[in-house]
Image 1 (cartoon, rainbow, N blue to C red):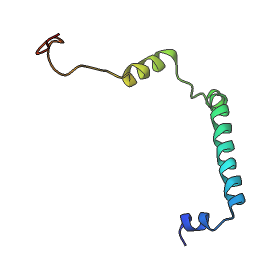
Image 2 (cartoon, rainbow, N blue to C red; image 1 turned 60 degrees about the horizontal axis):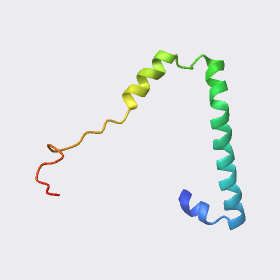
Image 3 (cartoon, rainbow, N blue to C red; image 1 turned 180 degrees about the vertical axis):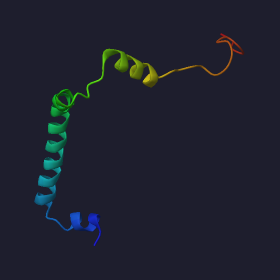
Image 4 (tube, one colour; image 1 turned 120 degrees about the horizontal axis):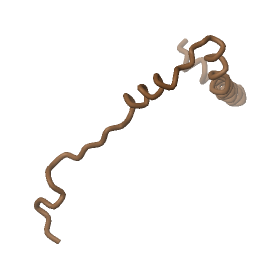
Length: 73
């Protein structure tokens, strides 16, 4: 029996409780991540964070030539 069919065989109330439990687990993880990183000495320095932000920055460029090429007003 696959995982999906096992999940589907649960009662609707049990599936709802399972979903709420997963969301609670994720919320707890998001709230506690900074404290865990500090405790394990894994927090990035300001320079590392700036370098990462620079790498992840979205670069937008326009394809084509001038803005006015081929247009008549």
